[in-house]
Length: 156
Image 1 (cartoon, rainbow, N blue to C red):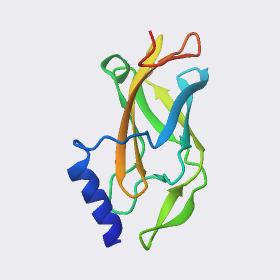
Image 2 (cartoon, one colour):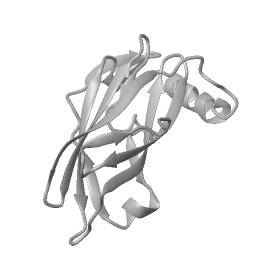
Image 3 (spheres, rainbow, N blue to C red):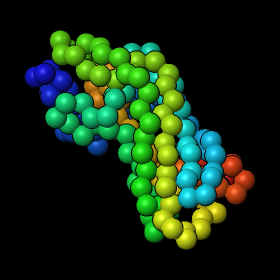
Image 4 (cartoon, helix red, strand yellow):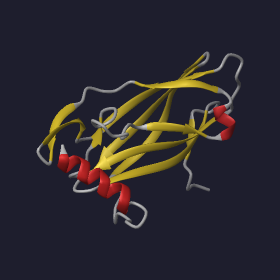
């Protein structure tokens, strides 16, 4: 566990100054359905070779995937639940860790507040990835609910 802690401490100290030459994963979000106050999203994570992500939080650390709502969506969202896929246990510097080493889809159920109306759902996805170092990715998304279309933050 000491090696895992050291890797995360290294992440916390070095992350502002370290730029990974290539992102640890291709991440996309799709709208899977809308029914009443419930919105179903799927976060698709295609991990690059040698990278891992975690099932909930790694022991003693906040490495769990999270959604942070933008101002317009925060007023309308009651909460969300990640439907965690079956994880595997793998070795991380001699310590067993639960997570994912291959491509994985994370279904997410979002519940809107009673009477809330949205044309789009805006959030920042926060996810953690480790290889020989750990990085935190924060990616903004805007999901058009009425058209089931994803508007990528970098598209025109």
